[in-house]
Structures are given as structure tokens and as C-alpha cells.
Image 1 (cartoon, rainbow, N blue to C red):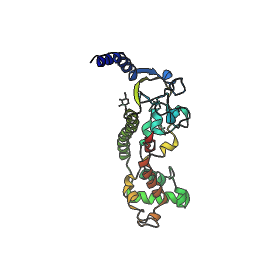
Image 2: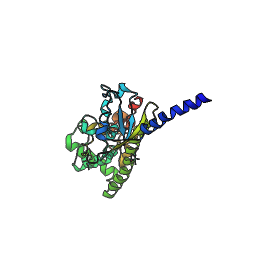
Image 3: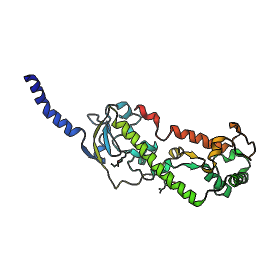
Image 4: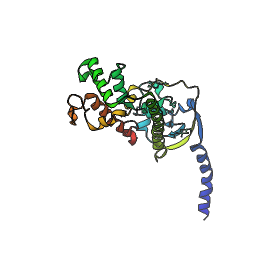
Length: 266
Ligand SMILES: *[C@@H]1O[C@H](CO)[C@@H](O)[C@H](O)[C@H]1NC(C)=O
Ligand SMILES: *[C@@H]1O[C@H](CO)[C@@H](O)[C@H](O)[C@H]1NC(C)=O
């Protein structure tokens, strides 16, 4: 009896100090910068969406020389989502314009622009016939499948914007949950954000390439096979125009991209 009482009493001060220091620290960005694993106690912190996690348990990933070392001692929420880290300015918590990487690209809009001669289509060169040939073909497609009205375009942008916002939050939540639910890591506290931080650079090209591809008015064509009325029409995959194949391949890539499943083992 006495022993247990003694044990509990002697543990009390320790319990009090640990609970006071483990999960409610408030650090500024400058203070957080010290915790990159190079300090005497080798502590490694990283923050996601303003919550600081202690990731010291995985020095191989996060310590000096580790593959994800550049994510430590800061809140690089933006880069966790974009996977753009070629430029250190990308490693920021600022999410400005981040929905852009989740906004779909549309085959019907590209086709319409090609028909109007206001842009070219990715992979157009492979189709042969040059710009004039492409415009002619695109005009045939547009006259067959119709033209998107300005109102329909605006409505599409609005609903895509809402979806993109949700996707962005889901991608961020994925990483927050990853650290929050991982038994190896613990919450240290919160980051006092430096609101004067400069706006981040544009989203890198690699992230923008992962945007979803949709057919819009040409959705059926994109899913079913080659376009009726075009040379080589028919359902065979090999006979699909290159840009349809490219758009489909891009669409497939989206499934594996965006959230970066490969990092889950961290
Ligand atoms: C990020 O933090 C903000 C503000 O604390 C919160 O409203 C939002 O839900 C958080 N987002 C995610 C994905 O955790
Ligand atoms: C948002 O990002 C996209 C892609 O990087 C860019 O084209 C666009 O100009 C940006 N918009 C704003 C308002 O910064």
C-alpha cells in the first residue's frame, strides 16, 4: 500500500510537467527553425496546418540527410500538398491559389480553342496536318458535339472551384491525420504564424500536370473510343486520336497522384 502511494506521489510532479510541456507549446516560425535535428538533443519538429509534431522518432526520414529533412523545422503545408520543393519558397504554410492544381482541364474547351485558333492541343503535332489541319478537325468536332456557352463555362468554373477547394482540404487533412494518428509522433503545440510571410511562388509545373482531365461535352467520346466522323473512326484503342489517348492517360494518372500515396510509409 505504502509503496504504491509513494510511487504515485513521486510520479505526480513528473506527470504535471510532462502534460504541461508536451502538447501546448506555442512557437514562432523563427523558434521552430531550431528543431531540425541538428541541435544537441536532436529534436525534430515539423508543422502541418499550424500544428507542430515531434517526429524525432524517425531520424532516417526527417533528420539531417533524410529524404524529408527539408520539411522539418517549418510548416510546409503547401509543399506536402503540391510536392513542389524545387524552390525553398514553396515550403510554406501559405495556401494561396492552391486550388488551381485541383481544377480540371477540359477536352471540349481545348477543342473549342483549337477550332477558334486561339490555342493548340497537347499532342497536336502527332496528329499531322499542322495547325490548319488541327483547326479544321476541331471545327468538325465542335460542330458535331456543340459549343459550350459562356454561362455553362462560368457555372462549370464555380462548381469545379468548390470541388477543388474540398480536394485541397482533403489533401491537407490527409497529411495532418497521417502525423496526428501515427503512434510514433506526438503533438507538441501550435505554430504562431508570421502573417507577413511573402506570397508563395506559383505551383510547379509537375503539380499542374496532375490536374484531372475531363471531357465535358466530349465526355462520352473520351470514355467510349474514337470520335465518329473522323478518319479511322471505330472503337479500337489504337485508332483513337492521340490527344484523346493523352487526355485519358492524364486522367488515369490523377488517381495515383494528388495525395501522394507513396509517402504513406514515412
Ligand atoms: C487547418 O486549420 C484551420 C484553422 O485552424 C482549420 O479551420 C482547418 O480545418 C484546418 N484544415 C485541415 C485540413 O486540417
Ligand atoms: C494561380 O496559379 C495558376 C497556376 O500556377 C496561375 O496560372 C494563375 O495565374 C494563378 N492565379 C493567381 C490569382 O495567382
